[in-house]
Length: 199
Image 1 (cartoon, rainbow, N blue to C red):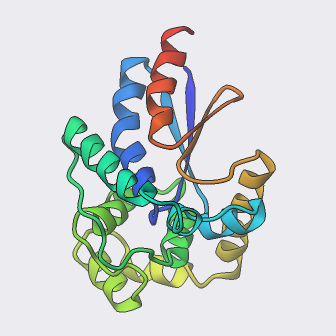
Image 2: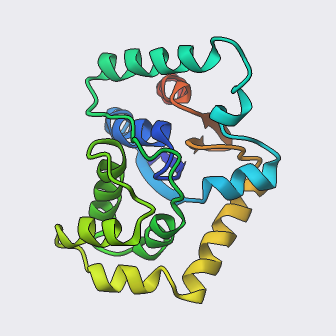
């Protein structure tokens, strides 16, 4: 079975798009998705990159185009999506939670809840009380997840995952790998579809 490695951060709207659309591609080609949580801020720092908002702040028309491009993409794929009014959001606690969730029977549910809270429900997801409230509305082990996000081994694991991503020349999110081929951004989704069709 072909594997699609999916590097993501909940604070990245385009990671959310990949999260929503990758399963369609995976099902089409009987592939499996391997989630790889990383900290996007750490990726930027270690790769000498900047967020698009920062990098293109002085480029006339670029951010306005990006907004319109996103609107067209969302409409085309009929995705539930609202721009988070608190963006950019510091997601370190959420991503530590994602590290802790790896291999747990509720990993998929945790991922869904966090992405929806960010990009559908417009929650302030770097506010600890909001995070606790969001978790409390689910069947997820709220107390366990919150406590785990403060464990040294979980903190270290997120740092290691981010370091490993940079070692693979990852510079942003979402980044996907199929075999040794890297695909970046929402634009990479169509390329993954084509790549798998040629396998």
